[in-house]
Length: 188
Image (cartoon, rainbow, N blue to C red; front, top):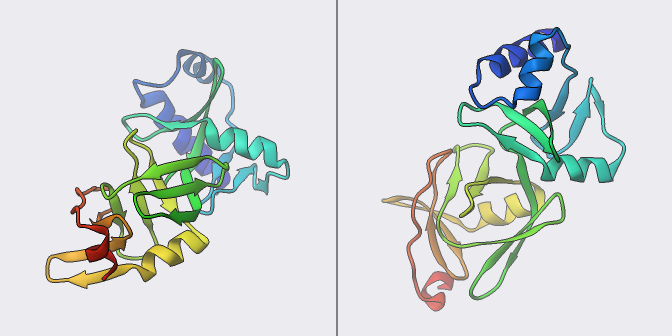
């Protein structure tokens, strides 16, 4: 199964117009791909074994990007390598809510502010937000549980009640615009 996944990734990488030139040269020259995978819980795997080095995992989590056609790569300095990513490359396990802002703490330790725009769900397990810089962040663990507890069904759809207002939950990966309400109304 892993070999089939590697072959599919190889085909996607070779067909992608945004694939870095060095990767194309290597693959066209017969280089093989090793399986490097970011799972749905934000854990990195190499050839079926989970990374033991936390600093390397954090480096990889900060260094992943996706092309327009959906192929994921690690980009560290001038070096690139194709990887597979489950759902999204950014994960938050903590959500800090204050009166005027909501802060996501990513699994890399990075803290990012988010507003009312961009909240989304697939209607099942995935809940996340698209940040102003275009990154999609999937919520896990305590952050996921907190957000789910703040969701309310209305005639218009699903609403997420944060301290700074109400956010409409869009369908993954579509992202809606938030509804600004005074803090008192959002909490009431």
